[in-house]
Image (cartoon, rainbow over all chains, first blue to last red; front, side, top):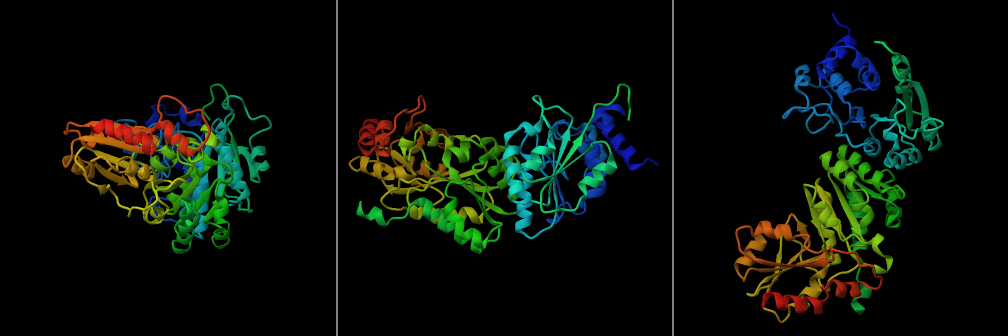
Length: 230
Length: 303
């Protein structure tokens, strides 16, 4: 029997044709897996329940880890992965939530997921629901000005059911001197920086009890050592 | 002129209608970016989670509306035209359209409600921009009494709706309708008046034998209504719109695809900015959409 993670990596390989290295190198796989495996109360059975937790993949490029997880968790059939990007497939280079089961937002253009997540968190709050909203963005995506408008809004409104996961693999062209976490803290968020490949650190940060502030989890992805398959 | 003192502004009717909707419908959310936020201060006390002024953050505001809609709520979003449609245009495309959710966007300022504010506060291209996206209903009320029924219908639905308010209004309201209302019938041609240009169109055509159609809803475009009117007159079509000249020309072409016809379009310039201040009436004359200018142009065209 395969472990769940081995299954996930096998599914990932169906998308990439590479059975080991790319899965290990992808920056989002660990965070997405921990979320769906251990944090979110969402499954194919409750995907239409208004009280389900939401996961919004804002960084829509490089969606292989996301699609592999959707197959591993039963939102889509594994066979769907084999012809992704082809005419008629529900899976493209950027996810479309109208086409793909389990996908909550359509993304690809950067800087939309966080404000969509804030609107959803506000909508859930207005309806008296306690579901949580997680939005995954990248450190390059953090350049987009709409994130900074939104960071201020979420902080001022105390959206404690909202968590932003920032995959920080240091790809922002002009960098974020002093770190990304400090920007969120300045706007009234609680911020935690973790090793983006360490599942226990990710779980601890992503499952932290709300404290009246929105939560930013900066998941640092350090370059893999040459030849490493970890 | 004395009647105008007691008339309400379209924006006031809009705010009153939204406030009533907030009380009546728990789906309704009102989002502002500072402009007009004061109209909703009282309502916010009753509905703190559904009345939100987000500050001057229009990009976030549109996507946040999309996020609300993803939870089944009905966002109404408001600011000045250029900052509602032009600045966050990609948010409208992605945060609403591509997410397959709706919202009611309500602008003020129109094309040149106060030209002394200059180009930054003019949005003559708003309707043309929305024409690049599928699924938008566009209302251009020409009188404050047309605002409430159109807005109530928009809020009750779940589609994507744009309502373009203006400080300029016709002297009388026309009962709202999904399509064209025939205000006058003639034989020399068909003149289409959209929203607040009706008074000058009626004045310009008072001695010309033409049909006058009026629309406070211009998208979807009433193809059948235009075909019927053109079928009963010479196929000379005149389009008078309070925004970019010829915005609806492609709709006329589609409606009359198998009918030989002539078309003259009036509205704001496409080929250059009007770099002048002054009054809306002066800009009407500049663009040739004042009663006198239209009278001459229309008479020449249908002769």
